[in-house]
Each structure stands twice: as structure tokens, then as C-alpha cells.
Image (cartoon, rainbow, N blue to C red):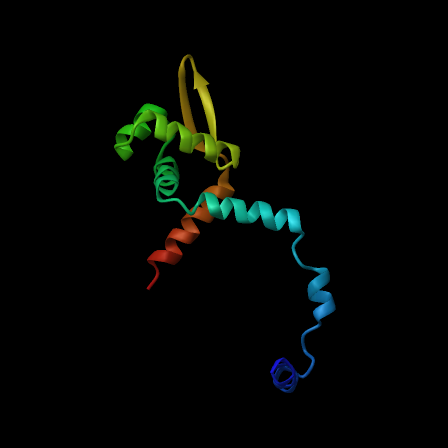
Length: 120
């Protein structure tokens, strides 16, 4: 069966795809794993809500707990995960810790995916 499929592909593609070149340009394994980890981080609704809130404003942990109606421990756990993934960063003022998105790339990815989801 595989040979039949390959022959059909050969007939349609006419050798226009250079497999060796594509393999040579393929994303490195470590980078692919890191990218997959970022998308895993975005795969949790609570983390998505935190990111969306931080997209609008820098917030302290207390403010995030109020916005999401969640306990401080649960929010802190998610923020630690997002910080370890370099999705959010923190800024300390006295005893208060403020969180914001790590950089513009995170904002761009999030906004583009949100627009994709809302697109009909």
C-alpha cells in the first residue's frame, strides 16, 4: 500500500519537493521541544486567563486572584509555571510582586491565536 501511495505522490508532485533540503532545514530537536513546551503552557485555561489579564495590565498576585476568583496558592503556582517558561516576569516593590508579560513576542503569539480562534 505504501508503494502505491508513494507512486501517486510522485505522479502528482513531479519531484518538486526536495526532501533532503527540507530535512536539512528542519527545526532542531531542542528548539522544537522548547516551542512545544510554550504551547503546552498555553494549553491550560487558567494560564490563558492569567495571560489575558496581564495583556491588559501589570497585576499583583492579589489582583489576579480577585479577577479569576481563585485562591492565592493556586494563582501563585500558575504564575511560577509561567515565569519558569519565560511567559511572564515579575517586578518587586517592597513586599508586593507585580507580574507582566515577559516580552512582546508573548503578546503577539497570544493576540494572533486569539484572533485566529475568533475568526469565522
